[in-house]
Length: 112
Image (cartoon, rainbow, N blue to C red; front, side, top):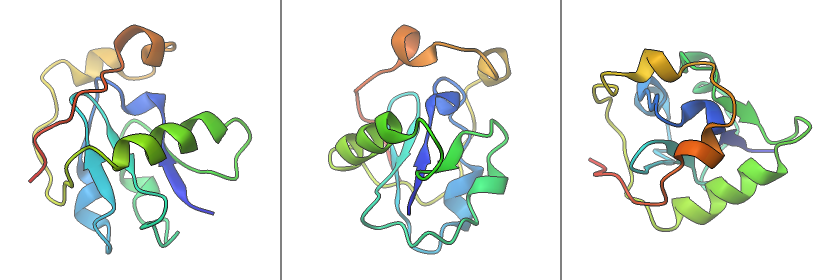
């Protein structure tokens, strides 16, 4: 098992999770974060830290797509280990459906 970041992170991109990760396995895209599944130690401390409820165990039904997304983009996006300010409009996107098709960006973020 590993944890994955899901669609709920897109356009919210809260970084509370990266501060508590003991192995620094988060990677930053332009408008979301991902977890490198080969680096995640399955400790779960990040899951309750996410205000958008975007972090899930990959053993939950329907997480196959998110495991693929996390695996693919963790290879190319920069590592992030420190909390940053959320986007100013993050609250406007919380809980919205269909964010991957509407807003996902494959572009990397800044990282640390």
